Length: 218
Image 1 (cartoon, helix red, strand yellow):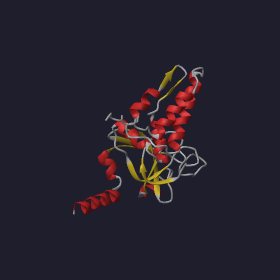
Image 2 (image 1 turned 90 degrees about the vertical axis):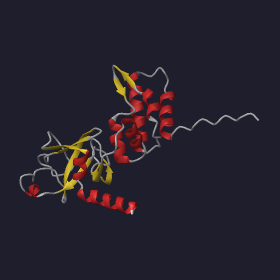
Image 3 (image 1 turned 60 degrees about the horizontal axis):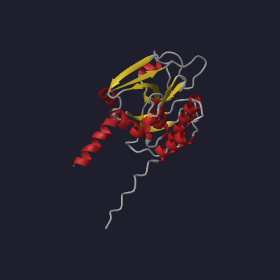
């Protein structure tokens, strides 16, 4: 009996959508329009949580466009930051491509200027543009009273991530405003943290993780 060839693997919804966007544009479109359109398509796929497979990065990389009028990078960190806010599987795919474990905070908030700005994300991935809430200290009622804070937490913003290092910045309240998630100008405080230092910021969470690990091992 003749063997029946296996059906080709079905691409993820995200990859299929980006493929359709790329292939659907006529070759007569200018580079600027193509770049803008592909960027909008990627933002839509991330915001609407289209499924991406963990190994999609290799297939997406050729979609990149680099010209004198602009660039489109399907693995740009900005898309990862958006995925950390909106959820979905792009973030997991990006982390596999970057060979990076996620930076997780017990209390994170959305940055940016859209409808999600300041939204409490709870326990969540952290990336540039995502905020982290840390416990208040005595200094917040004294020397640091002018720095951004909510009623029960300091507000810090992630400005960069690497495989083993993350940078958080805290800003002063802009003059005339007290909205805790505003940030203008230069940071007033800056922390560059290793993985171990990051874990030490959240001792309660670390203790819970250790207790959970002990319960599993028992």
